[in-house]
Image 1: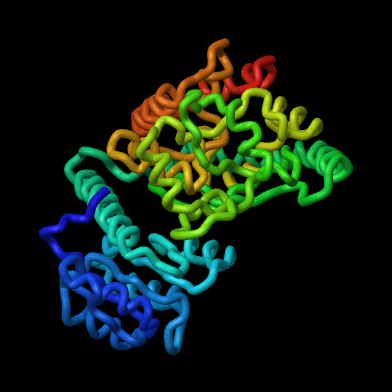
Image 2: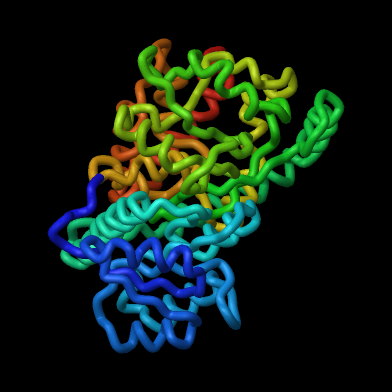
Length: 397
């Protein structure tokens, strides 16, 4: 993506780092740059100026943090929530990344900065937010309404999740002990997922991989079902830690991904948004059992009780995978409920051939159409019944 050369990008920078200021001020032909040394001056500038393409703020500014300033801006200027907000820091801190995600920060950069990458990112975020805004506006005219869970579906979710957790407690305890005895490390993990309407939440699961699964990703990349032989993706999947790179940070599923690698892969192919290995050698012996019986999914019942997910819906994606699917072609998959089981899961388990990424995404979109129809609850019950059958099938998908 290239920034238009005949149109300057208007940036408001909140902070005092002269190095960053000098970088942007050296690009007068590309950037209409404005600086505010603290939050008070930043708010004043926003009140006096209606147009700004993005706000770039230091992680720590005089008097408060950049995240606190972001929250003030969003509360005070509710009619300008489409303005991208980017946080910059001098060092990489995983806790900062997590807090940024929770508070709705659009992106997080670590110095030294690349002005070209930032300008490209601003352009991407502007287009993405504009498209999402059009969808919200279009919903008022009947094109696409924001998904709201129905009474019967929510009642079913609470009832089933509550009873299932109560009945499964003894088995959960046994498998928790087995996981701990087989390999060291936490028996569970919490990752960030993107669900309905791009809502980000904490996703719970039992650990089914060895603790060093992240180190073995490249070693077994050729086994990825969703990658062709000529592709070499660096995509992160669940239960991985950070890839050690430098440059702009994209936030992944409990991981960090270098934006240059991400953009290169994204240009090569958007078909590899999903990562799945055939008979993944990184899975523990206990992990194979709990995956086969879907016991590793049981902690997600807590997500259901909290309202993050439903029993039936589209699989909530890691942040990294969700970012790949922000094209107009696939955004509809996020206009329905996030769920533990769904249409593509039962379809995949009911066939002998492997499912392509296009087929999986198409089924996600098809389910959204079902979820917004008057037969939504009946279709959910049909999927639930097929799920019980699919759990006991031999093929590992």
